[in-house]
Image (tube, rainbow, N blue to C red; front, side):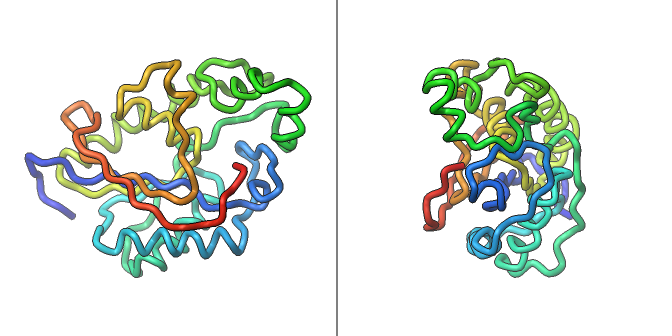
Length: 218
């Protein structure tokens, strides 16, 4: 483990790879579904982008698709001795309530583009029986600040494998993005984000590493 350092360690953010429901265009939320064979291959490719980084701590959500992604990511990164990961409820995907299991594109046709954007990307758009983006932020960011930031400030490298909405909530805090502006932020399957942070856990430097994959509707 890295020694205490005046320079932040690195925060690595990775979205889970394509799941079976992603491939079908279904809202998954906290439902447990496996990643696809394509997702396995993509995760291994992403792992190849971080061969130069050695995680001291690893966190996933409780959903199996993040843990499966991590397995293939570490294989691609050639990290057989990486530390054990910690499944963490605060990093779970957004609960989509009554939209869970519904086809996104059919919902878009039904409700129109403006409401669809609110459901999918909005900050405080109500989700019957589920969570708003604000609610995801209110559980994920305090965990990040309390558990992960001290590890980064001690010079450690921390790998987080989570979900699109959960990572977007972390990005909102890291980059000080407005409530309105977060609707324009997307965490895609083809990228890894690497941050160094200040004493408050906010962005000092950001690096984006990408692979080429087939476009996804998710």
